[in-house]
Structure formats: C-alpha cells, structure tokens
Amino acid sequence: MEDSPEDGRSDVKQGAGGGARFGLLLVLLAAVATSVVCAVYLVKASNDRLTLSRGLLDVMVGSPGESIYYLRKSDPGGDILEQAFSVVRKDNDEEFSRTAASISEKLMGDDQVEFFTSRNQYGIDNAEILGYLAGCLKAIGPPESDIPYPVTDTGSPYEGSAETIYDLEVNRVAGSGK
Image 1 (cartoon, rainbow, N blue to C red):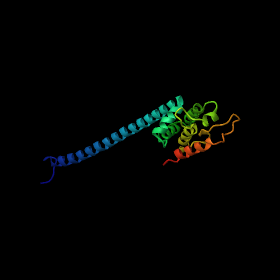
Image 2: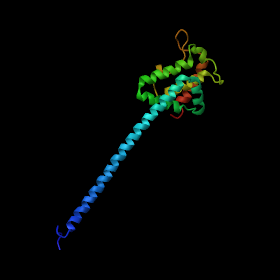
Image 3: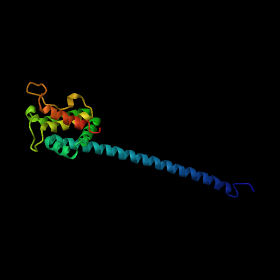
Image 4: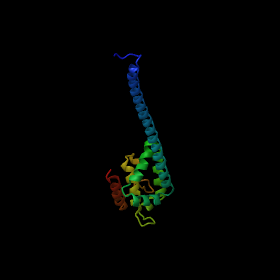
C-alpha cells in the first residue's frame, strides 16, 4: 500500500518533520533569549563595577589618608584600588585624571614635603602611603603626570631620604604579580 493523503500516513510524516523544525526553532529562540539575558547581565555588572569603583574613589577623595591606610592593610598588593582606577579610566580618562589628582592633592596638602617626610597618625611613613597610591596608579599605566610625587616650594621634585621609601613601595605595589 502506498502512502496517500487518504490514509493519513503521509500527513504523519510531514507532521513529524514540522515538529522537528518547530523544536529546532524553540531551541534557537531559547539560545537567543539566553544570549540577550547574558548581555543584559554583563552590561548591568559592568555598570555596577563602574558605580562601585566611583564610590570607592569618592570615599578616597573625602579621606585619602585613612582610606589608603586601610586598603593597604587589607589589600597590600593594591588590586582593589588598581581595579577601581582602571574601571573609571576605561569609562572616562578625564574623570580618572581629575580624581587621581584630587586624591593626591588632598592627601599631601599644601606642604607636600612636610607630608612626605613625616609619619601619619598610625605611625606609617607618609612616603609609603603615597607610594601605595602611586604604585596602584603606575600599574595601570597612566601618563607620568598622573603619578603623584611631592614638589618643593620652588616647584622642583623632592629629593631626599623619603624618596627611597616611596620608590620601594611604588615598585612593590606596581610589580606585585601584575
């Protein structure tokens, strides 16, 4: 007996083929939907990272000495601060430069050499604190002008014994497994 439309077997075969195509279409639709959901999640995560990074840097602008002291204590390699600076820099290079300069200026104050050659309230050399900040910045490769370093009243870079402490900390942080 031949397959004929009258006995319905031909329709069954066509229906099975159509069902397979429909199933394939559903799988394809599910894959596209999953891709869209993943893309939305990544964009949201990216926005959350930017928001969190900006928040950390805002806290640092408000109280840089204390922020760096506690970050340095909990994250000696500087990864957290480095990532925050990196995320902001990728989004807006000008904002990054402004924020880094604000943190440095507020940290050092008006008498940069006095700050640099003294110790903070925790007994840590301020040259180490500034070196930590500079090391985090140096690790992401901004222009040299964005790396904080104290200048004298005449505008020339500080030269003295605290420079060694600073350099050691910059190199330790900037080179710590990165």
